[in-house]
Length: 405
Image 1 (cartoon, one colour):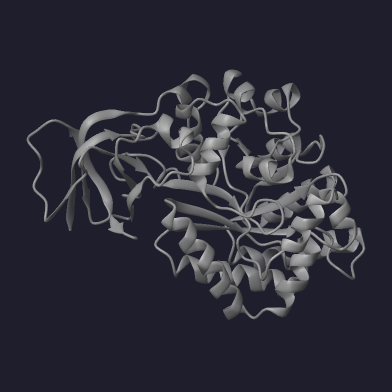
Image 2 (image 1 turned 90 degrees about the horizontal axis):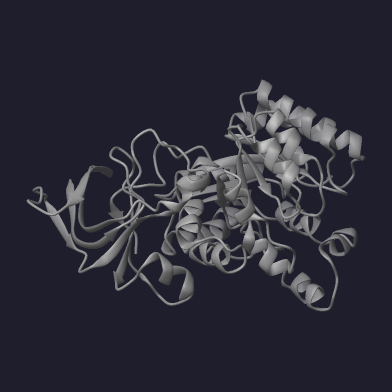
């Protein structure tokens, strides 16, 4: 079916074929086309332009001057979990730190205990509520991590649930094996690293990536190297949690092992910038976590000014970032990280798609890519998306050319 969008006030996110990410000054270009039209055919972008004559189509959407932008891409989430950690929310209000809550058996281990008790069907039902929430907010591509299992049976249970999510949503979903999220109960540190490496062949049958929480009090640089190497032998490309709680060396070990992305980076500066320079690794920052935990924000502006690309993602999880609203993430990129709206927009679309390995098929307005699009009400601009960061703006979300709300 051919679907024509006409009377587009501004078409955003236009990127030439073959461009998979933006770096440095390229991030200042939001790919804007005024007074535009776009043709989708069989779920993919077939053509776009400005002015007439308009191509023929079997269905026409009059955008009435609204913006048409690529759907958001969220390259870092933990949305397969059971229950809530609102009790820890009160602990934070009362002054306990992330590390103190974890040391008392809260945090990741709390989610692991709840997940162990839940069936796969229960996990799928709870997780799909979050997926539908995210797609209604305009997200068209989602990376989902395991990491609340912390033993072979429960980690594989999580990966099976993520695989079922892939088949249950029109959004693009990518799966990451994060067995090394914390040391599972009943293991020593060394025995758990052994267990994670031994899980790798089975995990690789379901996952796209392997990840490690390389942080003070969790997994060391040497642990991370060993786990990433085990994953690579099974065909899993690395991603890595790095420099959230302290300078961990995670960025450097991630780059050395060809990580697709290094994520968090709240404690990253000149040395990490130099480690990333010239690499294929995307610096991914998670301002929702900084907001919720009242921690420092990543130095996104400095990274871009140094010529690097930056992606932004939600870190949607029950303990430190309980929201998958990527429009709010864009706003935090502007308000707290001092990114321009153009830079924050590129960080939440094309660059976040790159950080989950799907920028060849979504994340921009490019002929041949999926028609994953957000149509706004009239009068919206990229500046207003960040400025009026909780005012309703979505008229319709299209995933692969099909309306979803």
